[in-house]
Amino acid sequence: MRGPNGEFLGLNGKPEYIKQACDQSLQNLGVESIDLYYMHRQDPKVEIEEIVGAMSELVKQGKGKHLGLSEVNAATLRRAHAVYPITALQTEYSLWSREPEEEIFDVCQELGITFVAYSPLGRGF
Image (cartoon, rainbow, N blue to C red; front, side):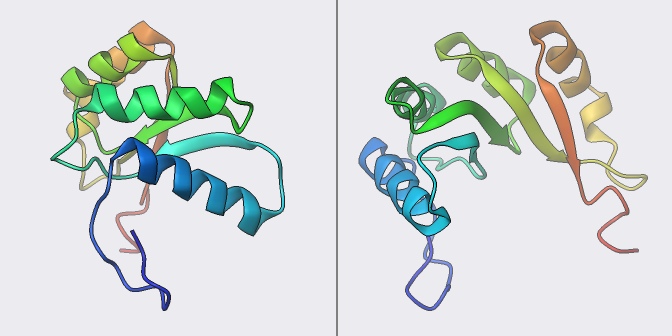
């Protein structure tokens, strides 16, 4: 969550906030639908099934087309995908951050999820 001046206020994965954030994004972007609606950080107080369930309702309402997650582990990705198909997973991957090679790549391939690397140049090394 961000404050009125862009300050970080913490994480909120509650379904009502997810809907509010989507509606605000649609308004800010001036569009009727978001191509890929991402959860960038999971609120540790809210189960992934509840988060993805709320996000999937937005897709069913036509407010989003596809769902993406960021920075979740392989087990959480599987749980999320069981609720609603996840299209993309964004995770740090570079010469210095090779963790996705351990499990994530295999799960993405198995489930047909696109892997999106962020900071592929080692955070601007």
